[in-house]
Length: 80
Image 1 (cartoon, helix red, strand yellow):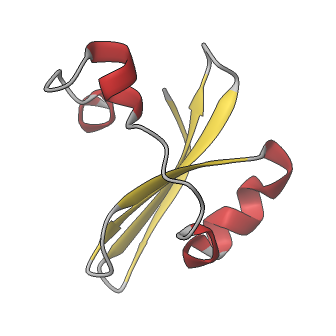
Image 2 (cartoon, rainbow, N blue to C red; image 1 turned 90 degrees about the horizontal axis):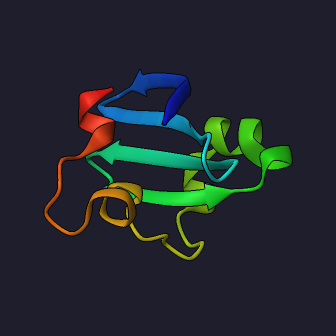
Image 3 (tube, one colour; image 1 turned 120 degrees about the vertical axis):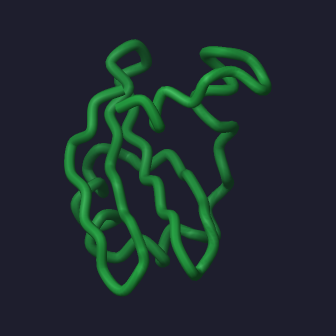
């Protein structure tokens, strides 16, 4: 996973991740408003980064690290 960009504002962390193996982009949001990860189309990545809560209602994707490492495996996002 490659960290494309990240920011922290008012206790909310927003990160765009690129998965080289699948060629997909994920938006991760953590903080006071709740945590979520969604897959976003590449042509919407900047918009999703700038306005992450517009994407909160999108279908939540299974956590990338569960897919790669199995449930309870090491979180590669935490290791980045």
